[in-house]
Length: 241
Image 1: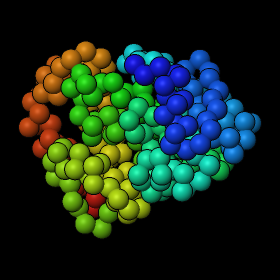
Image 2: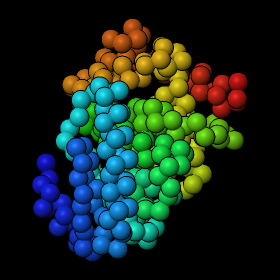
Image 3: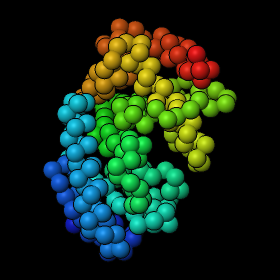
Image 4: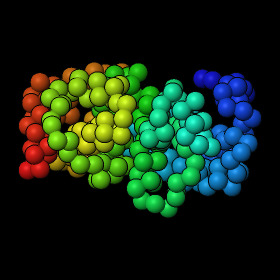
């Protein structure tokens, strides 16, 4: 695990002098031209989210959540290589956030919480959880999906399509479509198998396993059957049925 001094050195080299504040579960790094009170405000909100979500998900945690505040869209793009419309963005073990939004805004809070959940679940990928499942859990469990609308043309038919969309998103439209598909996928698990089914599936990846094995154990069906049911559900959601 990268140590704090090394991380500070790297972040400083990328974006000027960097300070940090830490809570029980979260460390927030911020540049010198971001007010310390703003950083502490983010720390309070994110630390509480981490505590609540880790307790609710019960998937175990792996260390402190690292957050990098960016003073503006330019710095965000410089550090992440992505447009600021993707803020908050989870990348390479750090949650990047452009400062300036109202922390009391429910929609913004949902986006922040989605990033926190992604950070909590990130380690499960090395245990076999596919990215689309991790991101679906983050979007759905945070409530971010509630404002997502169906795209005009259905473009997802297989789980692998979700991973392609995650990797290929490059515009606001792509991001909106991705939010809909991932949120609907989370919704599918809870409607098909009962409330809490998605979280129950995620818990299987606390240890090494495969999606096939986890689905068989929890839902008593194979992956192909799961994918067929999901595809039918998604088609209905896309059409607004």
